Image (cartoon, rainbow, N blue to C red; front, side):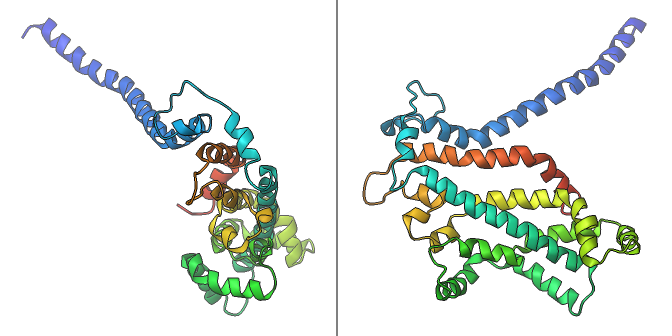
Length: 294
């Protein structure tokens, strides 16, 4: 083998890894783009279907449509007994009460578990963690009986009041993990300056818990906005319907369902969730990353 041939072979071997290094990111991004398209296909199809005539929605599963109309949005907004604005306001009221309730109650419970010492602390913390695995279907019947005897059926109280009692153990655990990451030296410094337990919580712990609080607010917003089962159980008057229950009203098993209007209002109902996630994504990632949850 001549010197020139050996040099050419060495140069080829050196060039091959360089070309693969350049091609690999392109292939990875291409694969991610395809995977994202597959995951987003149902949402894109729903948006396109909300602009199609009702008799063409299920004829063509593609996301390409020639005849697009906005009539479904106008019809769907006033198709039920109440304008869709009322259902949006009802959901907003439930979501606002749930978010505020979880932020206040879960942060106080988490502070108690993370910083205070009391009898049976480990036992009650274990019970709290076990409640995460308890399905809602197990407690829905006794809860319904309790709220019915209190006269709260067909009101927003059964959906909001439990949030004021720190019943969402997941958020309590999340905040406990976050508070444990805050140095206790800050508590001692505040205590030297004259702060009591309440002062330490309000002036030291709470300002540092912004990522965990934002994560709790975002998850509570999304879960409550999308909650169908609980709202269907407790809300019976159409005037009290929230968005998920109102969307169910578009589907009629005994008559023709208004699919175009339902898809149109479904798109409208996704806008608040999309905005909440878009605006709070930075806090969401930081909150989860700093709580020890992997």
